[in-house]
Image (tube, rainbow, N blue to C red; front, side):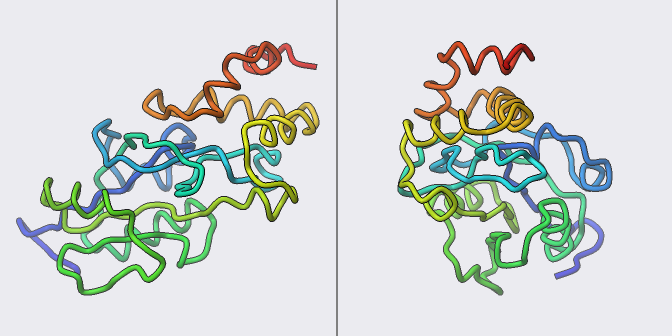
Length: 201
């Protein structure tokens, strides 16, 4: 679907976490600015990250625990949606099936499920393709506990100082459009505010 000239496809990339604020020039140079009127998706900080982010809790689409949040989007500069998918896969350091996609022409379908709001939103704005990070919650698999506000806070409090600091940075820097029960609870906790200010122990 490489298209040239005036028929260059409009490829939207969705974002709600570090994709927006964590500067990665090789990736960032391939897309335009972030806009605030993306689709509404069920999000929660319910994925335990790897060691590089200190096992902080990161935002994912979570149909079981998520709250409806408007996400951001940016337009890819690529001429081929497959290249935009490769950009996002490389940035996220994940496998291909964890990059979701929707094509207006239906030529290829994402077999792991497209959130209903994506297609409607994309059609309204006449996008040719939409891509997003399709990581899932792994909270129970990682911690042995079902996700809940209390379980999430217990996990975060168990992290070493560096992990707590990374967790606080991630939550505080998430877009203001992201409003979830866990975020509201954390941002009202004195210890979490201290981590934001760099004074946590």
